[in-house]
Image 1 (cartoon, rainbow, N blue to C red):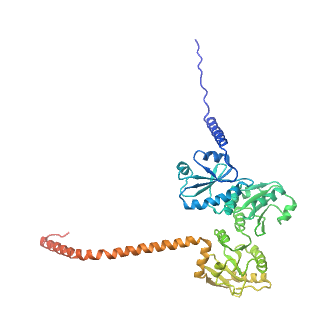
Image 2 (image 1 turned 90 degrees about the horizontal axis):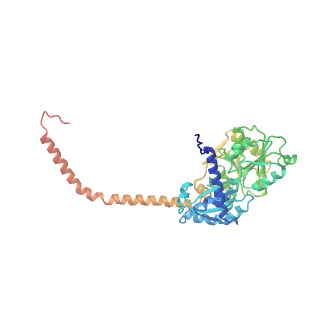
Length: 449
């Protein structure tokens, strides 16, 4: 008699994993759908039960992992309140949330929270650490940039105009015309936090006229804030392309202030600096245009200008004041030294382009006088770059260490002397008796070890 054996079909392992993944996604969708998160621009308070649902519900979620007792967290809170409605109103909205990481320890451990506040931007569920500025307006600017794709693809003239308008004026913009996305993708990722990148797939001759290029492929760099533009026609290879992008992070002629100084941190070039009385007056603006022309032909140097009216503490470090003959020209190494060019220490009003050419020629020929920035005023320069509270804190810590050392020395001087006077005779007597004992025990012919 034949029997039939029924066998249970085995589900292949890859299919099982796919089913589990799909179930997890469906489950998270149902959970997030069951929680109605506010989208009106207020900061969302999360906990361990709602955190995953919020990550699934929003494409872009900026999360503040805080502790109630943390002073820095308390200072950040009103900045988040101010930034949240602006971020929520963006074309691609970014929502702001916070979670008590001191209470929700498992989540804090999962996302490697080791200090407060810890800030992360979740982009489609993937966390990206945020170390940028925390003031509301700067926070909006930085997050808007961080949430954007590395390279945007533009299909028409209108999309180019919209991209430029959306990018705003805070970061330089690099537009590729007739370029493949892959050509700039690596550097777009590297400089993501510092610039906007896009590739135009289709464009008219009008766009070529607007952005001042006459052939393709071309990479156009411009700074909307400074109305400054450069065009790069190649070669589109690693070294040359990166150099162009690096050198165009700032305009050809840079207004020197605390923000632009920080932007030059990774730039090793020396700075040709023009010191003027007021960088915003008509004469200084005319000089800035002349500096741009010189900068375009001397890419190995950074060209900048600064007004005594705008940043007097900084200008003082170069022994310059309103009584100096201005504009004053020098080359600064961005550390403790600068060079004056013999015969070209300042500029006259007439034909400044020729005077700047002679200045650069003299500098390259080594016809210079080396100077050091003046000490007392340099402190004012550093105080403008860092918080004055930080300076006070350093002074306080130094004073505290000196006080502790002073007290330690006093204790050392107060106690051992009396005891030593009592102990020394005892030690002397003991050493004398021990030496006499050794002499009595020693006999001629014995070997002394």
